[in-house]
Length: 308
Ligand code: GDP
Image (cartoon, rainbow, N blue to C red; front, side):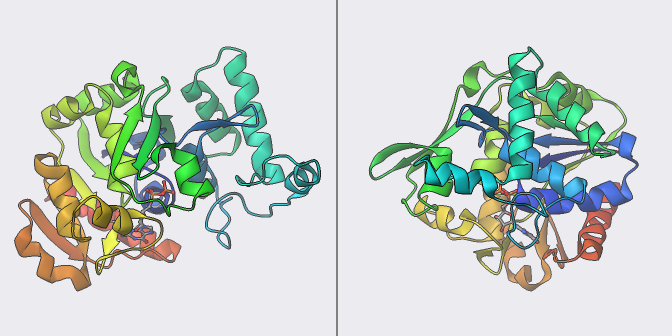
């Protein structure tokens, strides 16, 4: 089974970890959103790629819900005493990743080469690639004007009302060639849209020129897991954004947003009442992933859905 998973950070990484337990490593390709990437303190930061990397390596910080486990904060403390910017927190171990990524990018490696090197060094089996090696930067239009994504997301903790989103540079971005090759491969058996934020994690991937057409042309079923349970996001601003963009927060709205791309959407068992409002096939399952077993069970269900 060859499986392609489209993922943002936290929600996507949970299902990606489940998939990594049920799909042979060589048969799983994870494509990550890079619209959240930014330069900070002179460093290249790739939040979704790193969230995936930490989760798949078993190094994620489950207490914080982001970043790396066994983290220490000497760097941030020292930066603070010097009057440096403290709004974006970089732990000491996490910092090493950004320093080394920046060094390699400056030495001429692509983001996908750096990512491959890191994942191999950490013993991660499946491959993860950025949606593109070209820079794409998500921007948020709020009542006060356009904001850089991390200013909105971390700096202002998603408080500004979102009017519109834009993916700066996306028109010039080329999809990662292995992403397109996987979509065109005759043995592709499933495309999984992980339970990530549709607007800021999945749509930047879909906005890369050629990606929507390649998804429509691929032979494999496209299966999404809804990130909304009982009208609410498990974490983060997905439901708030839906409201601000004029939708009723629901899995039905997620399905409508992905539109005719979807063959199947998996909703949480408690949301059965929404099924009638959805055009594609709907499956019901427990979709809240708290434990590794939850992640594996949902991954199995997604693969079963692809086979039937
Ligand atoms: P980010 O890039 O770190 O914001 O992460 P994602 O976009 O990948 O994930 C955020 C989304 O994941 C939110 O909409 C959450 O509702 C969703 N999410 C997080 N955990 C779970 C879960 O266990 N089950 C489901 N169904 N969705 C989840």
